[in-house]
Length: 336
Length: 219
Image 1 (cartoon, each protein chain N blue to C red):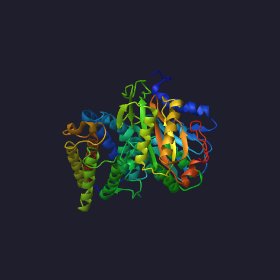
Image 2: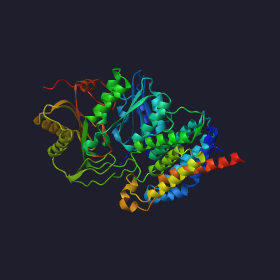
Image 3: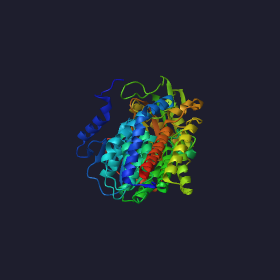
Image 4: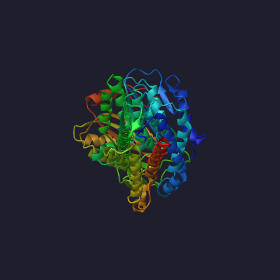
C-alpha cells in the first residue's frame, strides 16, 4: 500500500499539528505532549479521552463541543503515556472532577488507573469508564471484560452531553457506565488493514474470505468464512447482536453502522438498509440510525454494527448537538 | 540498630536498588529473551538509570515522597505496561497515607500490601500466573509475618528477600497467563519470569542496604 508519510515515527505528532492548524479557533496543543484541548473550556465536569492512533478518527476526532474536552494520544496502536494523561487532567477545568473515557484495552486501562492515583494526590478527582462493547471478545457474563471498539462513540457523546447539563462527576460516570453496559458491537472484516509504518498487510486475510470479530489490532476473530452477499452478512451480524443483547419485540435501540475505510458508501447503505429491515421484522424499535466511519483501521474493509438499548434519559442526551470536524451527528425526528 | 528510615535514607536505599537493577540488566535480558519480548532488562535499566539521574536532586518532604518520585520516574522513562506495573509498586501504596516522617517495618508492610492489592487488581494477575506477583506477594506476607512476630526491620527485609527468591523459583513451575509467554503453554515450565526476578532484586537490594546501614550504625 502506498502511503503519504514523512518520518513514520513522527506521524502522530504531524497529524496533531496539522489538525490544530486547520481549526486554530477551536483547538490547541499541550506543548511537548500528544495532547489536544478544546479552547474556551467551561467549568463543569470535564470529559477527557485517551488512546493510541490507528482506529480513526478516534480519539482526536471525538474532541469537540458537546464531546470530549481533551484527548491524550499515544503512538499508533500504543496507549498514551501516563505523563500525557496526567498533564491533560491538569490542563482541563478539574475542580468539579474529570471523567476519563477509554476503550477497554490493557495498556490504556493500566495508564489511566495509575494516573488517577497520581491526580488524586494533587486533589484532582477522576472517574474512569472503560467502554467494553465487542460481543465477540468475551462472554456476556463477563461483559465488562470485553474489548472496547466503535461503541465508544455513543458512550462518549452521551456522557459528554450529561456532563454539560451540570451533573456531578459520580452522576456523569454512572451515565457513561450504564451506556457502556448497554452497548453491543459486532464487526466483520472483509479485507485486511495495513501497518501504517510499513504499508504491509497487518494480518493475513485472503481474497474471498471474511472474518467476524477480528480485533482492531489484528487479534484473531471468532469465525472465518467465505464471503457471502451483503444481506447474508448483515443478517448474521444483526442476529448475533440480537441474541447477545437479548433484544425483544418493542425494545428500543440506537443503531450505529461504522463502515471501515475500504468499504464504500454504496455498500454501507445496502448493509444499513438490510439491518433496519431485520429490526423492523423482529419488532425492535429503532430510535435513531447513524452511519459514519468513527472507528476504523487504515485500509481495512468491512464494518461494525453497534446497538445501544435506550431509555428516555439516554435519548435526551443523545439528541444534544455536537460540533467537531470529524464527528457528524444530526438530530433525528420521530419515526413513523 | 536501625528500626526506621527517614527520607534521606530512603533516597539512598532507592539509589542502591537502582545500581543493582542496572548491574542485573544482562541477567534480566537473558531470562526474558527465553520466554518474553526480551526487553524487560533494558526497560528496567532505562527506568532505574533515570532514577539515578533524577532522584539525587529531588528534595522530598518525607520517605513517601521518595517512593512516589521513584514510581513517577519509572512510569515516565520505562513506558508501556512495565512502566505502569513497576510504577504501581512504588506509588500505589502511599497515595492514601499520612506520613509520620519515617518508615518502620509495619509502615513498609502496609505500603507494599496496598500497592500489591492495586497491582493485582490492575494487572488482573494472581499468584501462579507466572508474573511479578509470584515474588511480590510472598515478600509482602513475609514482611507482615515479621511485624506480627515483633521482628526487626533488618530481619523483616531479609525474610522478604528470601520469600521473593522462593517466588522466583516458583515461577519456573507454572505456566503463564499473560504476554508472549502465554503462547509457550507447557514449554514455559522450567523458565523463570523476568518481572518476578526484578521484584526479587528490588527486595534483596533493600535488605542488603538496610543490613549495611545497621552495621554502620553499630560502628
